[in-house]
Length: 584
Picture 1 (cartoon, rainbow, N blue to C red):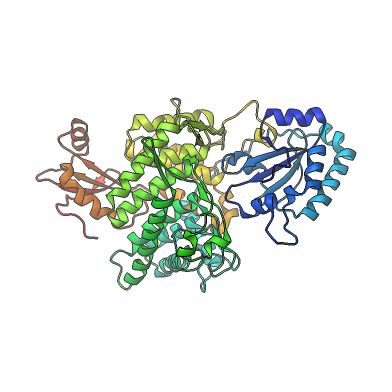
Picture 2 (cartoon, one colour):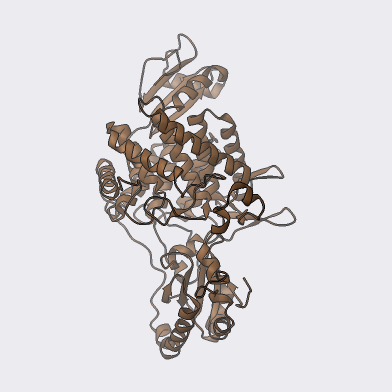
């Protein structure tokens, strides 16, 4: 970018300047991976229309003279994006000096922007004082009341909505552009597990194979692009995102577990396995960073259509698209969970070890002593870490807690994350707000949102902790958080998968696979059990040589006539002992 515009950072100084000068704010929300953000900044070479809105001297001069321009990175400040996004990136939003939205849109060509700036400036000169005098209270609180949550109905509604939106010809949902929509296919795998309806499995597998063999997948280097602009997954938008890959890898692990030993589906399983192994190679070879004893995955790779249409040899002769090396907690925690799932599906203990190192890094760099989780951090040139401004966001608290639980971290290590959320994020009537209350919050950040899917993620973590630790209060807290959305979920139709999965787990006891014996004896049992998909399962090994485990064995009353022995439990009821690793 040519920096013709004097962009300010989101903060008190910029808002104070707008108030002092009585100017409207031009808020630009962009992302390092966003193609049209780059076009708006720099233009497309040789294009007669997309010549670079913000590099136009006339536009830049007008913005600098009549507005206070603020630039926000979507990935760094998802809280700002959640309140101001106008339907995509870039977001271009005009605000009053106190943060009210005057007008907003996404991408504007130079010609459109010139006209718009003049119109907004004229409107502000004529109406600015009235807008400020009649300013509404921005400190709204999203309210909700708990209703009866029928998990079976939630899952059925979501499955029906997915079936209605499903594209039987191409896979995916709808007949336009296609996003991965991973939770939709996770919901189908859940439905198949419950009903053995092969149509559900076929829809999920058909979609995964389409995403992995058409243009949305980079068959040269590996990895999925963010979405397809066409219904058949053939023409992608070329950015690659860690959050998408973490969810897609987890989904593929579950699909492979479901297909394991399934008659007639060996070829499909082989195709998916090949996609996963190449994608893993891409991520570990290109996005993994290991420095100073720290391990993390990069956040994204920029879209570059010219690069991605080249062969491997041609790509080697030019610079690869920019990779965002910043550490993002939520996405890295999700990636660690994906590695754990892939360890089970592919028998790759090295992936579990890698996931553990990622979690070690997140805890070391981004977990405060009070249980608050940083949204992320940036490694500077001197090797130090600069924390991102956002702290204690629900999405990060939930993701790191879930990852730590799956990694087997002790209760005393994970509990502070829940304690912080319960103290700083709890919402009246149940559930959680997305960020802590900040008396100095600016603009619409004064609003306290209660997002359904972030609440579902926290509920999932609370449910797992409650069952692992034997603490029913945590399970009830999760159920209360979900009950707030007992009607709202219906608005999301085929997109309600994350909520449906959490509701299913909230309404049922997990199957617990417990193996008693020395670690060398229990490992084959755990590995055999992990090969098969189960939507709500906990696995643990108890070693009679350890006093704490010995007490747990005694409390469960397991009959131990010989070791190793495995038990399948639900609630307080357990099976007879199994003396051989399960084969199915």
